[in-house]
Length: 262
Image (cartoon, rainbow, N blue to C red; front, side, top):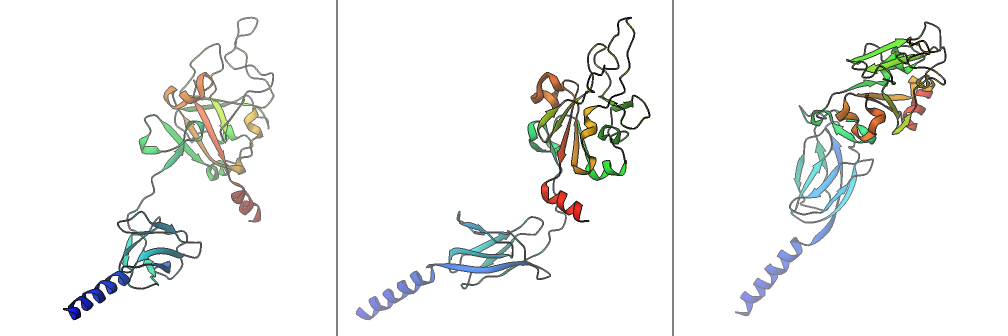
């Protein structure tokens, strides 16, 4: 009887030892052997999870025999049973994985384009640079549907007028609101008169010879330009955006540095 109890105690001790929590380390890499930086590592069936470093190395606490789940953007998920203190994982690039297109909407909120209930259109900064225009408004000509752009003259630095889906008023400014990195700016020309404003003799006056303020924005620092059309798209900006809004997102500092080094 004592022998049986001793054997049962030894088996219990072995079971406890086998399920003991230990530190498991390893490296996450792809099929070419290159590390996968900042991959996610979690213990299946628990809330324990960590992120690998920039070299793909990780360290996590788990019991021997636990299943580790390795995930990373653009790679297929891999599950590996931890049989020792070192567990390496190899991830393969997932086929058919498409990142949903994300656009910047009002107040800098990022939304998936397919979830929007209103019309938007985005133009990349590289496309604007190819137009070789000193005025970012002129660079949008012919690239966004429903947008009309007219120049006051052919002179360099002359003002440009932009409207979205035509004019909504004969007496007021019909140009959209410009927002640069979340900050609204005035695109009107200093001292200028809107093309549909009425003069003293009840005749329409054209724009003056000064430039509109959007000319101050260098197209080379623009990452994206998002055009919001209609009242539903611009409601968060109030009456100033009743005629639409043009959201300009500039490049981050690392992007600008890499461009200057080319």
